[in-house]
Length: 312
Image (cartoon, rainbow, N blue to C red; front, side, top):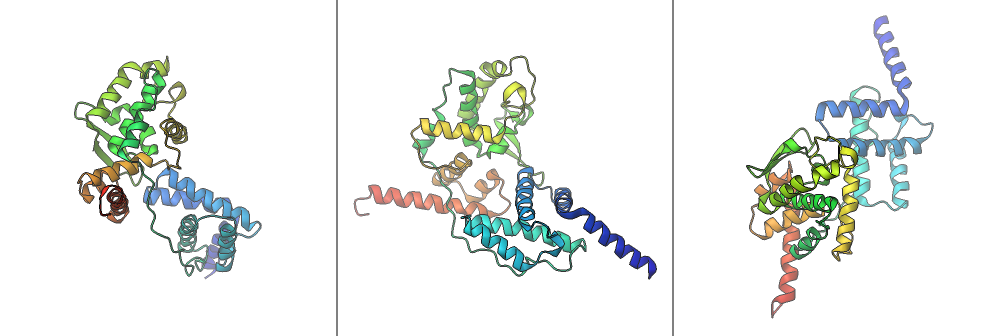
């Protein structure tokens, strides 16, 4: 009994010695080890939890109640965040407080009785095939950087890559003889082997033969598309380039970083690809995630019908 009490006191002391940031670090380490969660997701978890910690002030995580979580979410709602962002934050808090309960640092999860916000059906913004052609043609391929960006855009659209996957490709990821690229999505260590098509292959080969060595100068790099001095390019850097080329192509509406990925999926479905194949190429673990593109394709077909059918 004495030993048990001593153990409980030690556990309690360890819990209080951690405080906010210590809890967050241990939680992130645990889910990285057990679930193989991607770095971008871990960064989002840290941002959400650090923001909650800053708002709580002197209140320890182990003292948080459901009322406090609701107060925080209400404050965020008044600040103008979307229901989708609110749902993501609540999902982060559920995972975190569930971890504290499992580790016996809390007796009850304060988020367990809080329902997720109801979300409307989200239809991702995409581009028509003509707009994609204009976007791909926007870089100045007479310059080394423009040729690199053209090859990146072509490869991104040909394989439906995320921006983070594209900038993370290494030279060894590419097999031009077989016309495929191996992609590490960072989501639980699931690799995808994707066909890239002749046009994308031609642009990548031209980039490798004409531009890459000029961009590297005397620096070495294992990255397929290196940034300055051979360092890996950040996804933000290439996303800014996409926005710049979209404006040059006359595409002025707001676009997401996944715009070419969305276009890839929608255009495949428009041309008769089956949903399971698109799911595999996108790397979605759940078919329902891919099904959203059937709604995008249907919406596009409806608008074409209304525009061109004599009895629409």
